[in-house]
Length: 271
Image 1 (tube, helix red, strand yellow):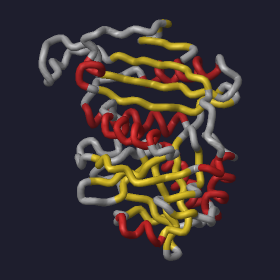
Image 2: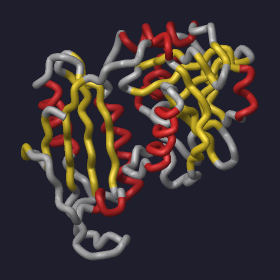
Image 3: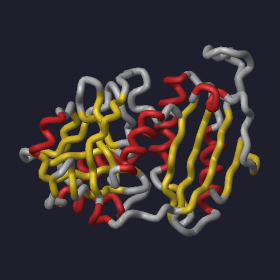
Image 4: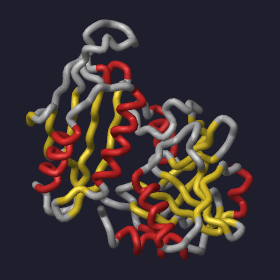
């Protein structure tokens, strides 16, 4: 981390009674920035606002937040990441139920662009960690990420770039830090996220790009046994962009046609 703002003031500490720390009561966004500008900022703020409405967090400073994001991005002309956290704020009473008089906390931090793994080594396996089904939280990028933490620990232990996570049903939902797309049987498919998973900003960018390129993408439930028919796969997030998968659950994938088309289109626009 090379810069941080807490409620607009430079700093690195929050109140120990903050409900984001106590209960994971909040949301976050990770925003790619390049040439001093945040990429796809409107999509990030729209998703954040949907989450705030769903969690009933009374945050009314979106314009202020937008300005602070732009401020952090502008101070680094190289590529960087800006992370945004909005919590319900410091607790005014004990217990899970909020009192309703909390003042939301906003935390912004700027981070150097991470060192990337070589693109021709992107290996993906299946995680033993299952995602909990909860339609009330599905799609949101909320602060409760223990399932992803556990999945990433195993990912590192097995020398993988990413792992696919299933729901209890089971259906393929996403990667531990990404959304996923599969080409199989002349179809390009991405899992539907009505019960679990995060509706990633890059996922939406790819869906928008596919419409411009006349590439049909089916959003539907994906069964684990369908993975045997996958001839191409790619994962998406704002850091990876459109990342081809070269090895999937023991098989080498040699087709990257869809990923290459979509990557060119996505890389040409960051609005």
